[in-house]
Image (cartoon, rainbow, N blue to C red; front, side, top):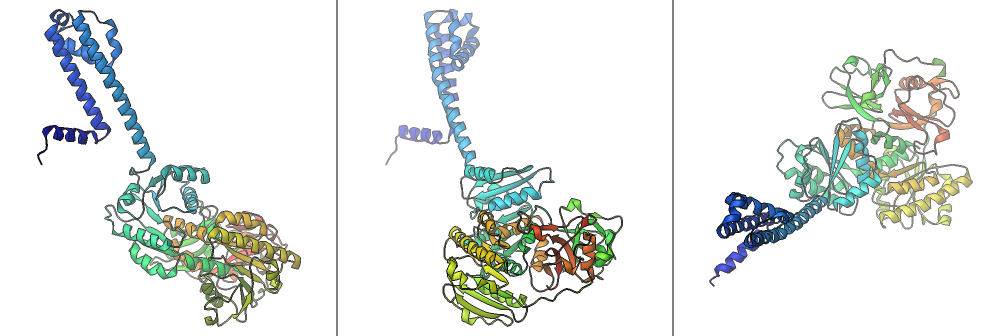
Length: 624
């Protein structure tokens, strides 16, 4: 079919108009030029006297342009009726052109603002931290990165998620109102698409965090994000890729997807380890929360050439600020609480607990030790435990297996759940005596029938059969019943419970449970720490491993004479003589007082310290 030239012209015009604001402005400019040119030609042709009076054709063209752009200029015109009619024509045309131009500019500006609000523009940043994905824990990550970068002149956190940019920014302003010198930039896009990843400039980032969503298909999304990142062309070097998977079975696939620069954390394993260690170490979760958070004290690895050739035991008293807990060998080996005669090499790093790396200071001279305040007894050996596990979920089997490695021979573990769990009879622990009791965890009479007073420790697991919020509600009811039963019995047992949401943990503090394990928050704290320093992963993993040295909260009278005035340096010396490292203490009278629950890490070495019965020393030791 033959196309008419008018149809072709109309199609070309429509295609030009589709190009947006610049094309519209171009057409208006062309219309203005045509209007001015036509008016000038007509005036010059039809009005000789008026043309001469206004400076010839150049003057008439100038007058026409002024009247096109500013219609009010016509008010002072003089001349014949033809000249005035032509000036009126160009003025009316100018009114149309200017009004249309204003409308086009306003529409174009509004469209541009809307595009910016959608978050589809690429950021131009360097040395920033990229967070991919969105979950309730994104606020924890942002708050931690703000705290970590408070000493920087300027820092940036870029978040890419498949959400509205404005909504994300409003939520962050609400939940993290003080970002100090850290700029938080949100971009709307799918982290699983290569094109959208370019919006947050991953090439120039110092670290990329693939944030888990903590839902059923969380691992699948994380693995695909890592694949997309690993397969993209990196032009300026590849930053560390930090991620976590919930199912240990997906760990190998995630690490393969992340490539050599990836660091993938087994979230399930971390939660199990912390739960098991906390079950008989009241206050341990508070210690771990502080070490994993940038608020308070955290772990640093610093080079200290001045300590080359010094034994680790002697180095414990060489710092005025900071507590050494181990040595990072130059070849990469991590030694936590090594033998006290271990020599520190010239190229080794010292692993310390400190408030900030800027606050780590060597002492001019060792602090004084109060010898008479050091306890001489060897302390009581730990006895077998009786533990009650209430509830059942996917982590229960791992918890039982790790408890079997961690606990003393002859210990007892009873599982209380509505029905006998699948696979329960296949468990064959070597040290634990394993049993099962039927129980409805939210029913008071059912809990009382368990005789919880016969146990030293109680673990309450989160119910995975319901949504996380409802599971936390069930846990809260169970904790209230257990605490009320405990009050009547006279405080015979400790309680450790799992929580999904940190806000529910804050509500549950009224139950005075000894430890709340909010695994989602802990994972995000760990990811944030690793984004700042990847070397900490091996340190933290060793700390949570039953094999080797881990954190214990031991009775203070094992180290210091109760009621005797001493110093924390004296407690460090008492622990050193036992082959342990003291990193802080816990006051029994404040064990139910938020937010520290009596825990004080890295205290002053020289300030007076008097500990009594019920107080504890936080130490790094090989066994409890």
